[in-house]
Length: 179
Picture 1 (tube, rainbow, N blue to C red):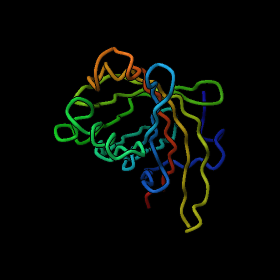
Picture 2: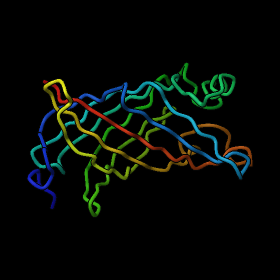
Picture 3: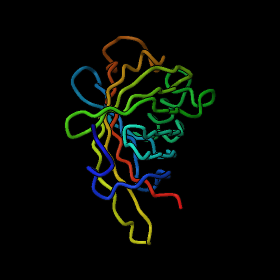
Picture 4: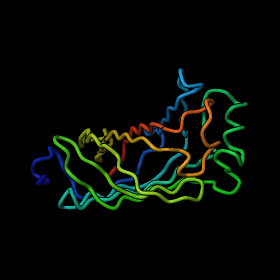
């Protein structure tokens, strides 16, 4: 069992995700051989670190219109109804349901709502630590990864060789203690 005393600098409290220093990147296969990459430029949320770290929680909202693949035409296509349909589904949301230890790291279980579909997901989380933010407050950092099947959320065409169905998500999060 992981305890707060085993995590250097651990502080229970509510943390606001720093949108400037946090990002969500995605990667999926293109034409079966290459990889397409992108990111969402706008996300927000909060992390509540409980006295018992395994009782902590996370909520996050991603602005789906902020998709950025480095190609404006492709970004506009991804925003359309056959992919993210940002006019109908302007946000994706994550709400954690459990935190589990996994060796030196953690697994964060939760529910992701994307494209109007809610499905369970598990993220592998590496806790980066808690430190002074240089302005008299505290900040925490973490990295998380998971792989989704985009077709389970109704995103993009089913099957075909153009785009892979598996999408790898990588999150780098910094958050500031509310205070």
